[in-house]
Image (tube, rainbow, N blue to C red; front, side, top):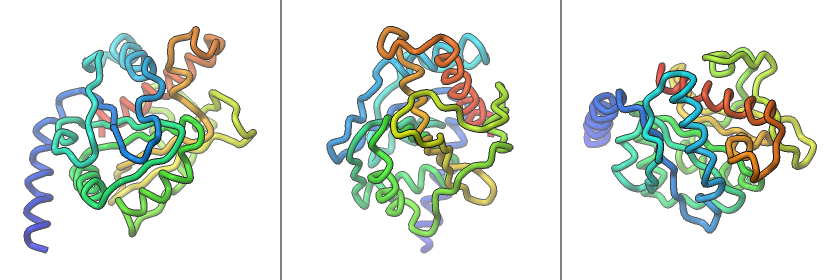
Length: 216
C-alpha cells in the first residue's frame, strides 16, 4: 500500500509538471480492433482547436501504448475503433494510475467498440461504473453550447447518442462517446460526405472536450 501511495504521488507530480503541454496522443491498444481508424480525424480536430480556441497542440499527434510511461507526458489521450479491445493487467494498472494522477481519456466509439470497451474498463476501474453525463454537464458548454448534450453525427442503429463518463472526487477522468461517432465528423469532408453543419457540430463538440480537459 505504501509503495502504491508513493507511486501515485510521484506520478501526480509528473503529470502536473507536463500538464501545461497542450498535446494529445492516440492510444494504440491490443485485441485486434482498429485503433488507427479515422486517421485524419484527430489532426483535423487539433487544427480546428488551434485556430478557434487558441490552443497550441502539436498538429501531428503521437501514438502511445497503454502500458508505457509515455502516456504521462500527455494531458489527454484519444482512443477510437470499431472492434475488440484488450487491456492486460499492466495496461489497466498504468491507465488507472495515469487517470487518477490527472490524465484524461476520450474514447470515441467508431461503431462496434462498445461491448468490448465496457468489459475492459472494468479492469481499469473495478469499483467505478460508466455513468451518463447530463446535458447540463460543463463539457457541453465549455466553449460551444450543446443544450441537448452530445450531438448525433452518424446514424448506425437508430439509437440516441450518449456521453458516458467515469469520475473521481468530482473530476471527470474518462469520457466515452457512443452512438455519436464524433470522429467520422472530424475526418476530411470527402471521406464521409457529411454536410458542413454536421462536421461543424462534431468539431465544436470535440473542441469542447479539449477545452474542458485543458481547463480542469
